[in-house]
Length: 360
Image (tube, rainbow, N blue to C red; front, side, top):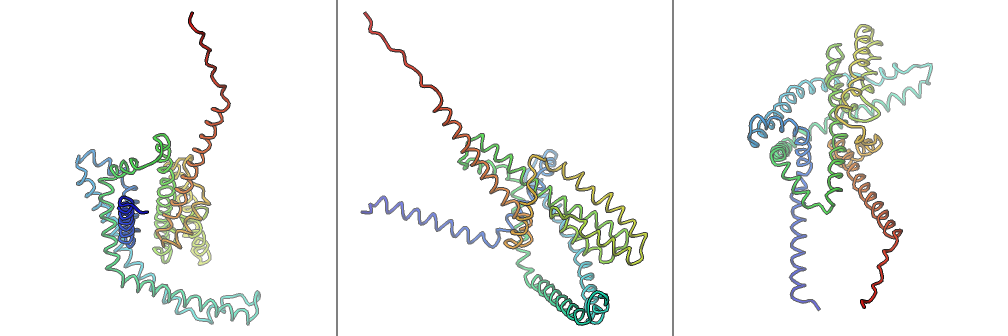
């Protein structure tokens, strides 16, 4: 029989669950924006701490950093986007001018028969047409969704500001909700920070920086479509075991084949001395070897995250997998320590209580 108290508890539980469901539905459209704002705050928090010593005002310091980041994002984006659109149009026109006959003639006749060459050229032309259609469709969707993207960008900056200003309070609040012991909790947050540094700073930031440095080399040595190739190099740079060489080495080969020997030698030296050594010099400064996450986890996380979250999944995928493995490792160590403690208790001899003699 349901008592009045049980009925009230059930209604309360339903209301609480309902509120959490509604909150999840509200946050779902902007969840990625919220996460992106928190990640930005994590990256720029060391700068915020240094500036806070000078300005002595949390809100003013956070606002100044937000304005700085806004300028860093908007000004290059406007300049790069116009140049990127021009380069994309030029690539599109050059691909359109490349007909079936040109592709067929580019295939060595000594290697393949005429029929195989024709089929291959037809397939390649079909692939080029579909790729162009896909890119045009994506660009059209981007233009149509621009108002929505602007709102999401506003959420990013809003979360970025408050994460910088109140991030420490939020972490303390989360720690107060933690069911872990103080010692385990401290170890968890240290490892949590290590994984985040390994993925976010050691992999993403270093990869982007390598791509930018490679892009400077492309502009110096007059590589065509340098901006587009810089973006591709940045993308290759954040993927472990691949790196920027996947882009700059074929570019170097192209320069030699095009008869630009001086530019080819220059880019080769620049790639070997500057681009390749950046990873060796910068990554150890940012990431400790003790907290570096396994490359296999990063790759699997990036690929899976790309399918689930889009481009932001390149960051979120490895982080989520790293956090899951961290929780499992803490649980495993807790089980081991508990079993060792119980074993010691069982092995300890029972204390003998001396027999009391009656007083005479």
